View: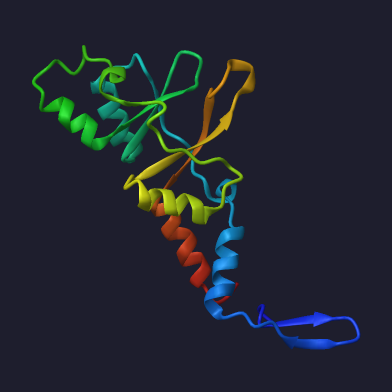
Length: 168
């Protein structure tokens, strides 16, 4: 009965005492990042800012995740970072993206096991457009993170619309 009623043996059905908002909150917290993450868009740390701008537009994203030569998360570069670099007057083909990116450990991340609610809260609290979905690579040392996906404001909006569909 949609969570409003609960059942017990020899007692039968009874009112569970939960409001619609409480039931919605429970459902939100059960939604996992792994079920909603999108493909990450990555670029190498040694790539030029020009290549990063090209990738940003070709992939139609607002954030690129920067990986080192081992393929581990090294940083994040946003539209604002690229615009700032482009207005700087330097040759974009000669400027490596590693110079302008936000570096680890100043990057907010989520794991596939995190709830979509926690990811949405981080997007709002840290005022970012996307979060890298990462898994720890223990063999490569402490805080070695591999990017396996991304969660964006659009992802959260899609999940919200899915919750609102009445045919589910």
